[in-house]
Length: 199
Ligand SMILES: C[S@@+](CC[C@H](N)C(=O)[O-])C[C@H]1O[C@@H](n2cnc3c(N)ncnc32)[C@H](O)[C@@H]1O
Image (cartoon, rainbow, N blue to C red; front, side, top):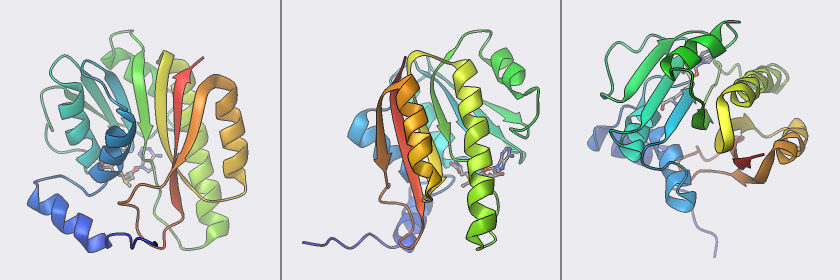
């Protein structure tokens, strides 16, 4: 039987009630519950991390031995948790990989999440290419900084190009899955790609 998606307000209210910094956290929780995406001790990079719900939850999933590197062009005005390091930067900054590497102290990350999104204009011809540009940059960062065997979770909007991104990911990851988190708004074209096991 068709199951109605819980309303947007459900997640916004729930996030507030649970003291979460944003409802985006539920999109990470989704992949965590179904695939055990993050492990204790993981080093994870989150691109597009403000206002911080995902980073806040990731900090719990990776525990005190883990590390969350939270990157956003917007300043995160406070420390989310002891194991979260904020980098205020545009992901298109040519120096971004070095900045993240510095926080990782030269090691590679186990996981990368891209929840990057620019302000939507509502015009698909504008919004989709912008999102694809962000995804392209996220993939470049992942290529350089995610270890062999690591995994990534990327936000995209439905478009004919999604298939070619999936194909590209299949070349460098063992498994690729399309995911629509239950917290994604009802009429949104947002989807996530989960790519597991970097080759
Ligand atoms: C959907 S919000 C992220 C929500 C966040 N993951 C959370 O858990 O609260 C998208 C974020 O992408 C960031 N963003 C968009 N373009 C960016 C860019 N070029 N460089 C860095 N951050 C960017 C925005 O500033 C915004 O905070």
